[in-house]
Image (cartoon, one colour):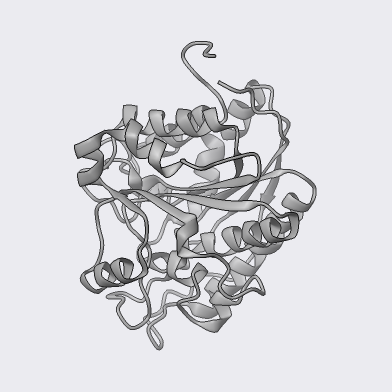
Length: 307
């Protein structure tokens, strides 16, 4: 297990503007209360908490042309893009505390720009119950937290697909999705047409998590920047109830620990999203506490000293 030796910057994005249920806006504080900063400091990591970004309130309106709250989603993602870009430019590892998963548009657009500027190869590990590859034409809800991967890959409104100044921000081939178990009917056809690399729960059951993670991380080298986008709904709701779109049959505690430990073993983690912690729906603060436990493993905590 490698000691994580790069400086880390944490910032919160307290909004649920892209979600269908209120409460993810409280996620950043829930993660802080659960001791995220203290846990990383205890590991000897240089970590600073930049506080929370500012943005518009959630107007809580219905869809307009297939999107809910598009202007507000753009504003929040622009703030995330700027914050992440600033940390990356200083050689720091940005850790975004969401908020809902629409915010990954800004965080990953920043990382993609950074990789283009530095000649790095981007790999995105998307840990989620959902593929988030919806569009305004096929979405049943208009919630933009179901669209970030599509937007990053150039499918969506210009205000989001061009957020980072490069269209598309990313290529489908840069994504690996683990834990998928809820995909809308038309979305299934879209992800198949675009060839998204998906390790769904059936595949995880068939081959085991170790093989899944080995496949998802294959080909990483010294020139790879690994971005992990961790939606807590990837976890089974029996262990992580505090999220807005829970889906039965998620990954269990040991599987989640293995994912994080194997990522840590690569030494390639360059940026992180922790999203969709909804303390309003939680039992105590157990989901945020579990997320902190897993993030500790992502940053190098292990049971034994391993070679």
